[in-house]
Length: 379
Image (cartoon, rainbow, N blue to C red; front, side, top):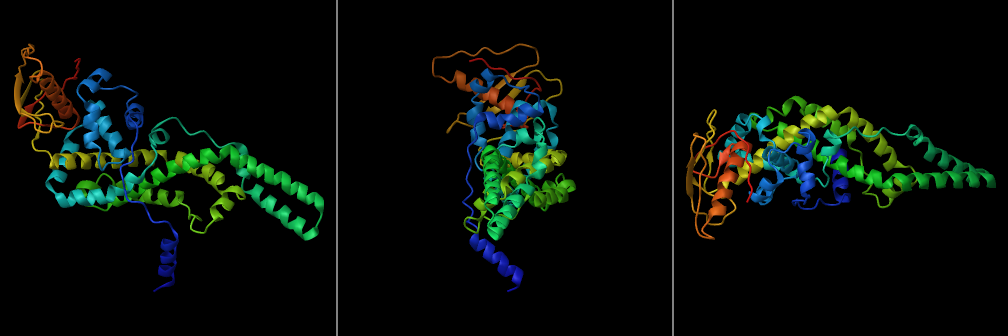
């Protein structure tokens, strides 16, 4: 075994084993944050429609096995589907639905994304990060000065040097206490950015159907990931704490890495959008592969009516297929019946299928013609 291989083996033994990948819960506000940042808060569906059509429950149905990136992109498409060309996503989803092996390869490449514990939409698409204070450039000199004074005090025995050492130590502690929480929160952001950049590089190595949009920036994404990553001292017990409290390692890394992230925001935005798009397509393909009934909607040019043949609601366990047609003559439909007969279910079925047709390109039906019009509900 080579020296490098032995060194890597020792590191792997010393580092804690990675926990199994699980879906980390994020509240609805964080999932919606990306859409509100890139679209200025303009929602395609109002709050009443979102609730009446059971879209929170439907979104949760798509979410299993998907990280915060894919969930945010799915939400963006549901809330603002009119600004994107659905042809490319639909083609990619079709390919993944038909190819189990390709779907598995994409799943493996995206798996690390699910370890992301933080939402970075604000960092990447929000207001610029606050610049580092001017004194931050001297943070490297302060620990060195403290250690030099301690060495001199030990070597000479001159008591006033211990007073200087005490003042420097108190200054180190004050800086650590002031910025420790900010540095810890920022490290979660960096970890998530690292997962994003690694997934970008992994996906770029797959077949052209997935990799083509990712390859132009793949090398830059890998380079940025290496630049942000630091060799952790956590595998030597106690050294990380000394590095933070005595050398201000975490505070110096906090300010330095924020400068790097700020300079690389165009790359991070492109990486976010492309990786989130692939993971959202994967979530849809995985969902449709298990769906009992779906079709690709035909969006009739200039149509104001719709037609759904044997449509179902995807959240019902044993739905009864229903067909409904509303023409282009401007007239609506009047539905009547006894309580509990299924009027509300029919309305929710129609509404949800119109939303998924606009957002994702498919309906839960044998055939569907849908208009490119807004959807409103009040139930």
